[in-house]
Image (cartoon, rainbow over all chains, first blue to last red; front, side, top):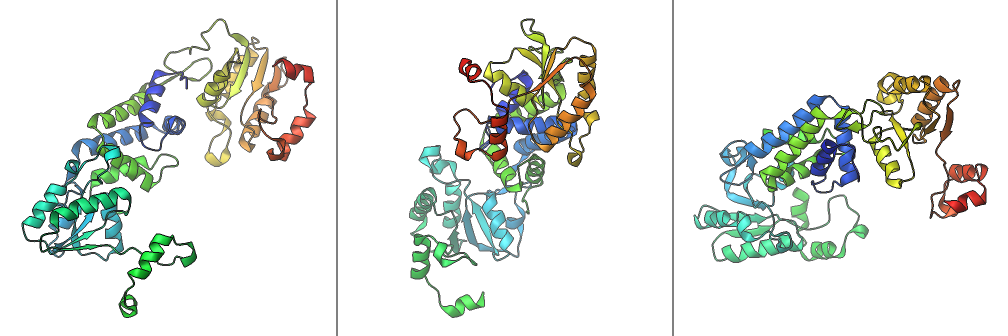
Length: 205
Length: 205
């Protein structure tokens, strides 16, 4: 692509560094900004920069937060002995949306993935092990996605904490509510039969 | 969506103002920036802001440019009597890429579209009519996209300059080179038969 302006080229170049945004999409976005009032670009730039410079992570659960201890960790009404292990802030938001969970979280910050150069030391695993060793945790719910990286990470953490008295559980895998059986993948359907639950328990939900 | 941080919420909010980027995509992009070095966000913000604040438009053809008269308009070797009428900088880049065109451009800045609130006065139509009236233009090639808005804009401009001696032409519409006839739409195939060209002329290209 040959640009008629270095300023345009630079903006498109930086924009296309974002994942899933190629040069053409970046050009479309930048031309959109050019048609809008200057304030929109200023607000966008300031919001991104302000976020990147000033964002904090909760000292307890490592979730993104504006304060040292996030709202969830600071809430006395939640069960602080129950920890849900998730990958990032999106998972916390998804689980909070269900309104079903009253424990606290531990945000790993990613999954072990040698291909992407992410090793255990870049995640908050040490902090989790410390929590477990402190003796004030009753149960950990593993809620990482069930990909190869997720399973590897689960197993790595499991090996480090399996000899403690903490109960280790994982979120249920099965057919989504409302889904047709015939379209479900075999692994999920197979598991949902092996890990069937008493009808009366399902009835109560 | 409930965010755990106002800074994050603001960044996602501004990002999702961009066309085709919803809240979820915006969150994914912002979390990506959080995992990258701070410099990447700074470069992106500065590039966008610098572009929006300092970008210029060529005084002759209204294309995006860093100088008052763009490279194409300042080039003496190009035919300044031949003008190609296009919508925006992307069209200029596409035509320049072909290496087939030696005239200059006139960038309209959009198409007449009452639904989007774009009227003739927001486009550079007056400037085009002035060029035509100055008498130094021999031919104008209409190269707007053949949508309803494109056709409306073409016709609006045509009415204003049809009584001059300027030759008015439009880019050829037809079957793309390499395309199979059976998959072509009827309008294009129909036109390509009605507007057929002598075989020997096609042979020379």
